[in-house]
Each structure stands twice: as C-alpha cells, then as structure tokens.
Length: 327
Ligand code: EPU
Image 1: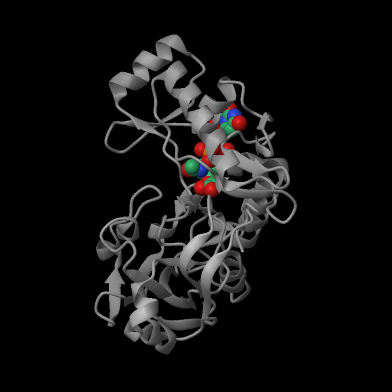
Image 2: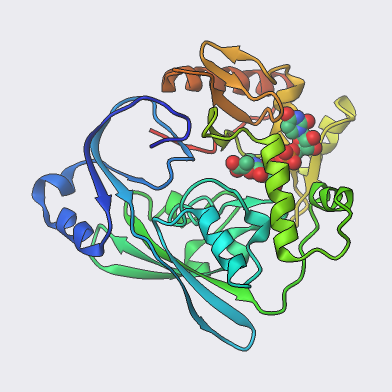
C-alpha cells in the first residue's frame, strides 16, 4: 500500500467508504485516542517503522459533473478515486483542463494536501472546494481555495489542519474557454517532435504521459515516491552568487523575484545519479527520485536521503527539504 514498496505493518487498518465510519471512529474512546495515518495511494509516503496506530485508507469512490456556470464546468470526485483516473475520465467526457497533470500517481483525496503539480500546472489552478471531516469536532467542513492556503507542494493540511481534517471529496472548476498550456519547455518540445502544432487536450495528456514514462520510474516496476525533495527556493542574491561558481546552475525566477533551483540538477552534480546505498538508490534518469532496488527498509532510504542532503549542503550551501510524508 505504499509505492516505495517498504515493508511495514499497521496496528489497526480501516478502509473508509463513508462519513459514518469516520464518525464512529471519532466517537470510539479507544480508536479516537490512537495516532492516525490517512492513506490515499501511498505514493508520497516513506514508512520508517511499523505504525502503532490506526490507518484510515480512503476508499470512497465516485466522479460526477456537479454543475456548470457560464464560464466553468464543475467536476466532483470522491477521495478514494485515483488521480489519473479522474484526469482520464474528464477528458473522456470532453472536459479539458487537467491534462498537464496526467499520470501523477496517488489519489484525489491526497491531491490538495501537497498541491500536486507538473508540466506547468498545479492543482490550485483548477481547484474549487473540498469537503473534509474534522476529527476535532466530528463535523463536516467545506473549504474554498483561500481556506486551503495552497503553495508550492504545500497547503493548510500540512499545517493547521494536519492530523485533524480527512478529505472526503474534491471539486474542480474547469474553464469552458480552454487554452493549451504549453509553457513548460519540455512539453512543447515533445509535441513538436510528434509534429503536433495545434494540440488537443488529449494530445497534451499523451505527451505528458510519454515524458513521464521516459523520465520517471513506474512504481509498479521499481518502488519510488516521485520527487523525494522539493526544489529549493533561494534569494536572488544567493542565486547570482551560485551562478558565479556554477554557470550551468538550473534555476527559474519566481513571481516575487526569488529563484527556484532544480534539486535534481544539484543532486546530479554531486554524483548521486544512479548510485545506491544498500538497497536504496537514486534513479538513473531523474536524480530527484529515490528508488527501492528491492527489499530496502525505510531507514535505508532515510540514510540515503541524509547523505544526499549533506552533500548538496556542502557543495551548494542549500538545504534540501524532503517531499514525502515520513512516518
Ligand atoms: N535535472 C538534471 N539532472 C537530474 C534531474 C533533473 O540535471 O537528474 C535538470 C533537468 O535537466 C532540468 C531540471 O533539472 O533542467 C528540472 O528537471 P525536471 O524538468 O525533470 O523537473 P523537476 O524540477 O526535477 C518537478 C517536479 C515533478 C514534476 C516535474 C515536471 C518537484 C519537486 N518535482 O521536477 O514532480 O513532474 O517538475 O513538472 O517540484 C513530484 O512532485 O513527485 C514530481 C515528480
């Protein structure tokens, strides 16, 4: 149940299909006192030990067109649906918008927590609202985009509502006036290679899938949790100082004038690409992805991550932050 393929056990496990089950847990003296882990697709999770607590595995299903305005189509999906399944379903309904986010592993319910993003788009661009169960009150909450406080791989669910809210369903507002989003250079290059000049949303989805298959390891074949580190954000001053020392530095200017550095490039420069420490390794074509080469323990992955962070800090003076939830 975790895409890194780490062997760990939970003391208690409950597949969740309804709010009534969450209410029952909340009202049960023993279960409500236990540490909780809400599990979606398990694709952004590093287990370093057995979990002495209750795992709530979101398994509620359903996707629907929930309405429309003059400008938008509203789509609602239950937390237990797979993210990529939702993207494909919307495209099959003739509703474009989510195509740049094709093939991201994980579930719909987990998608707002880290504000999933790829190839020039992020969930926040299409998010309308969500329903969550509040464990502190037993009530249902409706949260808008503002309430969710989305940032780069960040949201209120990593802060104020951490360990408190369980996401039940997510609603998206997809603009009727669709425009291809080709601002990610690698994506436009892929379409050019394919000879497509006026891509449909389905063409973009196919191109994103092709890039992802080429660059990112398939968790069904080799255990991984996608990017293991966030791309660090540094000041303009630090970026220009680094550029003097490392003219090839890969960086992208942000709206506020700071710079995002490509963590994959930093790790690659430290010579880690393709290397291993025990059964934990660094992927051959994308150094940002740590892999389980077979039978790795969570501790081994953590040790490898620590070595990488040390090397990057020593060489570039930048501290990498891990992306997956570490338990
Ligand atoms: N690079 C290297 N060596 C590497 C890896 C990357 O030199 O081993 C360089 C690339 O050549 C490129 C730059 O670093 O110039 C950025 O690489 P890439 O386009 O692959 O994107 P990324 O910044 O490494 C981010 C997301 C991915 C997302 C891609 C595409 C984060 C932490 N990761 O990766 O998201 O798919 O952009 O938009 O923001 C994830 O979060 O799990 C994830 C896979």
